[in-house]
Image 1 (cartoon, rainbow, N blue to C red):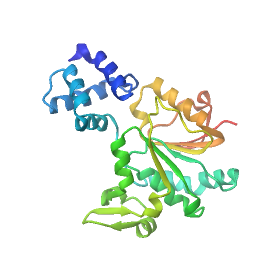
Image 2: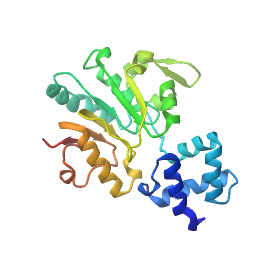
Image 3: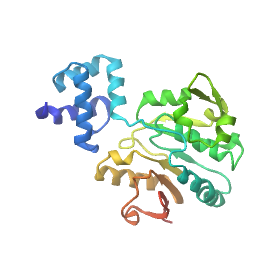
Length: 260
């Protein structure tokens, strides 16, 4: 199927608005080829035809392209730093108001974690987090707010006790009061317009899947989306090599502030 993969990428861009050129090709092609084989198809042309005619297969394909490994309070030391140092500094600058964007939010673990943490600093009714992801299916999962015991095991117990209800042997539902503070929408980091005047952007554990060129483009867009002095929080394997060239300054490991 090698000879037609370039054509396949063009067809995918036209059909889904997802540009496969921006992803690491070897890794992405292997994932797509596995899915094509699973569906008993031997050519990219036939697979594109299937995607155009079968909505379930289309959704399966979109889900395959996106990375949906997520959990609450992932890398707890970083969340502690966010709570003890980063958020107090941001709130001091903003006078207690916050515009927060959780980009590539997957199944909602991260934006809901942000809301719960922010309840330590402000009344719940004043909190609003924008949460976006390219994958419509995981956004629907996020809105449902049902999680496994494994997904929430890293959360501080105070949050589990206060904001979760056990609904099955190993399933928990997050409270509507937390869900109501998150606004979900579909968003493509490589194609769509970014929000503006953000005080905090959280985008973790997704940049590793992009090419260096795509990363630079996204970091520049994040920079434009932040207020001067505002903060970008990235994943534990995604530290910027030369943040100054991108208009950022490292303030802690995995936290960068936009240059004033």
